[in-house]
Amino acid sequence: LGAALRIQAAVPATGCCVCRNWISTTPRLDYIQRRTRLRVVDNSELGRRAMEAGKPPRVMHVYGKKLKAATGDMVMVAILGQKRRGFIVGARRPEGPLRPQFDSNNLVLLNDEGQPLGNRILAPVPSFLRANRNPKLDYTKLLAIATKFV
Amino acid sequence: SIQLEMPPAPSAAAGSCALSLGSRFLFGCRVTAAHRFAASPVQPPSPLHQQPHLQPCRQGRRWLRPEFRGVYKPRLSPEAMKEFWRLSGIGPDHSRAKVADQQAEVPPEIKRLYQEALPPIVSQDYRDPIVESLHRAEMMRRRRVINIPEFHVGSILAVSVMDKHAPNKVNRFVGLCILRRHTGLFTTFTLRNMVDQVCVQIEYELYSPSIVSIQLLKLERRLDDNLLYLMDAPHSHCTIPFDMVPEPYSRNDPVPVNRERVRLNPPPWMCKWHLHGYQGIDLEHLYSYLSDKDVAKAIEFSKAYKRYDLLDQYLNRVPVPDADYAFKDIFIQHQELLQHQQQQQQSSKKSEVISKLTGTA
Image (cartoon, rainbow over all chains, first blue to last red; front, side, top):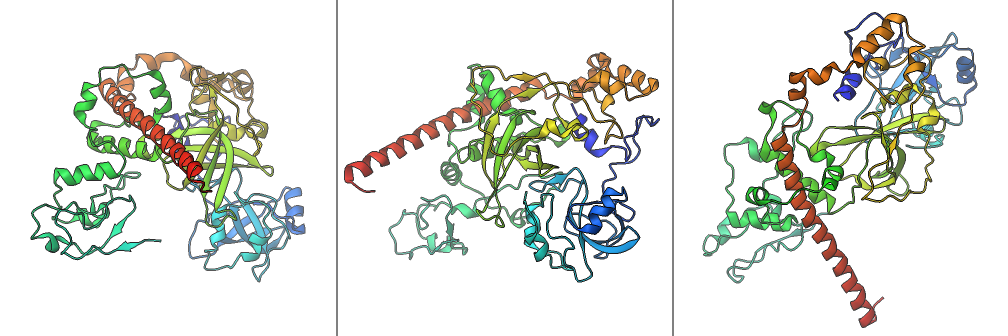
């Protein structure tokens, strides 16, 4: 059936069960932008406290003169009342062939110098990030603390 | 690394190929040597890399190579074309007449092995039978290099992909096939697995040259043609160990159907799973989360009124003559592929025997 493509293209943002819309009017809203909540996947103290308190970091700014962030982009997040930089290591949005897609938007927290706050990344990291292509950030140390590449 | 071989001087024996066309991946001199052969009586065959290479159409973007955008298109002599087909490994006698002469019934295993050979379900304005037959030839050419097993949505696969950043230059992923999209050369399939408590989905193009191997670990079918609802299901449904041992299967047996009905997590969901006619979801459990109105809508949707919708059937099916032609075409090439594999086995056995006799290692 054409169900597969219909689902991928036209899924409401909230799969609320009491939604009255029979016709979906917006496509899948899976871009990471300002106000997006992310999931911290490193073992930093700040990230762990935020996720346990049920207050995940929210994107405040996307670096690189663009409005949408994807895997491999640096963002500024608001986390537990603080402003922190973060690096996106996984996104819900499908990126195309040979690039993994995750069930959550994964974030690794960075300090102001661009070094990771934690010393281990608990989620698998996409292998294409090893090309180290972000012009704003040299994330070699981040790759060094990754446990698994996918 | 590309090896450049300069053609020999024009004083070479007339009729001999200036550029040896023995190896498939030969890059000859870029300078067209037409002037060198102006005096020779025999038209030389064009080098392989100068043969026209039709760029496949990807996602609706038609990008022609520069040599096809201009007015000048080199005409190929039939001999040159035959030489090209000979070198590319496809039989030179493969033609429409052969498909038309194919009287034997196409065996059902061909339809199982080559599900993606069906032409796309799209209006006739966008279909080009020549392009489709060329794509089928390219698909079979790729299958000479790599073994692509038969699999369905619900099967478990292990895919190794070339990755320059990986330590072994190969990246292996094991997962459950949840989706098969598109047709022909651009068939893709998506594998899903849980890695370190995080669910990952990767889409692969079946005929991509970056793929080193596709290994089937478990052959199975499900009740639906896609398993996208597993994104809202407990992770236990898509957890497959990376060191899973392949389970043996027989080609002659029908594909086993897994009639498992999945219980989804409580809402919110990514999609309104109750409105897409999934059979693999536990519907009673699903409806318990919905309001009465939504349940009524879901039941209304699931009524089999679509089989009376003739236009829907017409638009969403491949015309039977086209499907028959495609499978006959594939069947002929499948037999050639089997012959090619037998020849390769014999030649490898021969070389083994020769090495034993001559005492080489």
